[in-house]
Length: 249
Image (cartoon, rainbow, N blue to C red; front, side):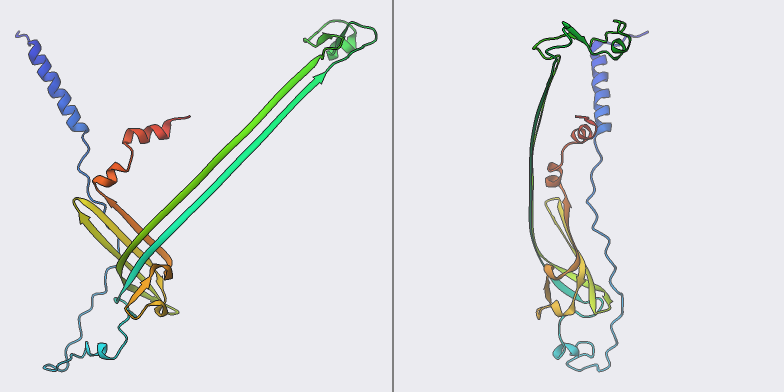
């Protein structure tokens, strides 16, 4: 039987380690998909009733009608200007100190006093229970307790988002109130950034240039997230997250 040399054993061990590390390598990450949006209404344009004219039947309304969004499928520009700052501070301090001294300086001319209930009833030293002490100026029972509590905590959070997103009217509610939603996806150097806006607006809040500020949105939902090398550096490693969840102290 042919023996395996030490160099061959080392080479096989290195190969096994390389295969194990390859198996532990995480799979390539895929980009975070954009939030599901309501598909646009598919409707064919009306046929032209006046061929050869300078203005078509479907586009002539822009000559005299308001250019602001008002129908399902129309686009309104939402100016997102969100600045929020929150701060909360709490401080608690509590101190408590108590002391107790109990003693008997004279007990019927006896030199000791037995506080055991059994001895008091029977008159005999049957069960001392460690409750027999000499009579004198020194206290028979002395206790002291100190309790200190000091807590101090504060939280602070601030965020700022400034952008403009084109949103579609997906539904017209009674009022009338327009339900809008829109998204914008930007990918630069393998870094994917997604901005999604949803909410309810009033037609009277739409400006003449077909824009509306994000502060006028009711039930507003602004999502700003992404994935890439920068996002990966903002998260702790998987082992750190596991230890944070199972560490009992």
